[in-house]
Length: 335
Image 1 (tube, rainbow, N blue to C red):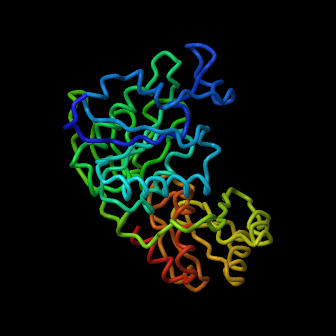
Image 2 (image 1 turned 120 degrees about the vertical axis):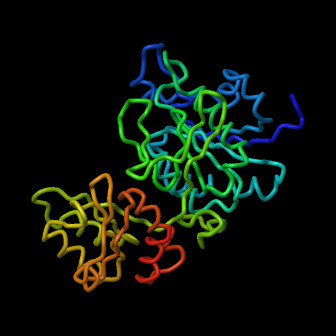
């Protein structure tokens, strides 16, 4: 192995990229079986990775990403930050992750990792035991991007299906297709392409990583934030359940540009009056939710263009810093 190659750290968490199915035609049963190969076994499938970088790999956890939430986010962010703090020779880092909550983990890390070095999250839609698996190429291309100097300063990136996405904007858009991850409406950042090159065409401009105030090094738990989904004829039942639970905050996934059933608005306004921050988001898959004089008067916060699950992540982190409504609103405009 060439000692002059850059050192890339890989932290594995499980997911489909390490999944084990009962046969080569299984694409749906393996998550219920729950078996995973190790990161060393994954790397043994792609010896070509040694032509790209020196690798130091570890299994942090081994679960499907439906089992990943606040505690795992904190553990992962702190492990990444400790790696860059204690191992300065690491040039970039890859996280392998299930695709179910990959977009939420990506945004959480985008806001909490304290380095300008490349951090890349990858996963797979088809397990390594299946025909046509995307696990091997996604992992190899993630390492290629993590070892790319041009990826520095971009925040946390995702690399799947040869596309590079911003951790803030990426979302899962299809239940089974390998091209499932999409950049909302704003466009992905570049390619890890078929000629072995990493090519960027755009860069994130919202604040991230070292430019955020979110330090989770001493956090053992995150504030609870719940999402309430709007639908035709919805009443205040679910909003009131969140109020009764005394959750730290709430995100409303409403219609279009930020409208909600009247009973939902009434209950949510009552929650604000009790001191609970309520963020208005949309179940639409693209576009902004904007502030209006009435929303301002009611004390709501708008999500800008974050999807509800992303707005939840930002509100959770915002509440570790402040409970001031105006300050939280500004975070949604900046991050």
